[in-house]
Image (cartoon, rainbow, N blue to C red):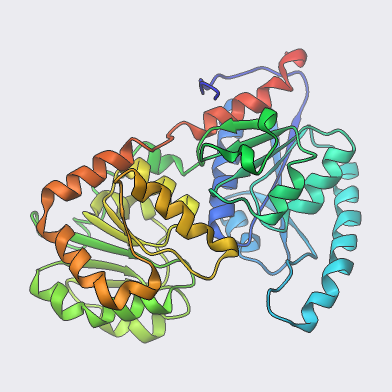
Length: 375
């Protein structure tokens, strides 16, 4: 494993980077974090993002100050649908588009953070010997990164024993890049002043994903009276698909959001977090050191969220509940956390031990290897 020591390096010419990945926030925000670290650490850098037309990265990346080009690309739908017929054509078109991008932009390094948008540009870059790196967030890699691992130079991972999926000589255990505001805990006041949260009031945060989780929202709604009886302050990200249904519950002690942009403030203010177990969420929870109930999404490739959560649970660093068991045991598990401060402190301490706050530095060290001869 690299010992990440972030240093400023000097280079002779303009350093152009392509970063590609998207489809979910778990792919997008690590890419943004890497980009910001490159700009701070490598002078004369220029970054171009590559995403998929119509996906959320096409909005989020420009909002964070970067240019992005969209490829006409999509993944294979697991259900039988006519859309799958277009996938081979989209792949060919995206490969040709990627060739044009490489010719015009002339990057010195290409980085992929996962999702089908990253495959064409990383594949073509590796074929023409442009240095490449993929960043895998999960304990079970996605199809794109598995395929790309045979061609790229470096593979950044967040879990040990990834040689079951990737060539061992390319693997670097760095952890997942997260936003600097979370690693440095810069927003110390959080939301407590804004929402006039009482000093000793427990704050419970629900993170069901950007779109939201039907089942998680339903179980929270079912237990609202219980939460009120325990004087819990609730920060509830119900997701964009469900906001119109649940916004009626907004009150002095319940704040309902479709999406939480200032997640660093939320983590700092929270005593307990209930969340899915996507890789980025787990990395943020570890760095923030928050006791949590993890409810893995059952609707992801190879059930990787369950594997992510089980790894954390084995370290006694969270409580994991499968969605199918929510109605049966959710209230008891939540009640246990609310009542037992020692348990909360234990989970917090244990998950802190799993954090990789210097993930960006480790990735930059890999990139610098290809620049050393030019310095």
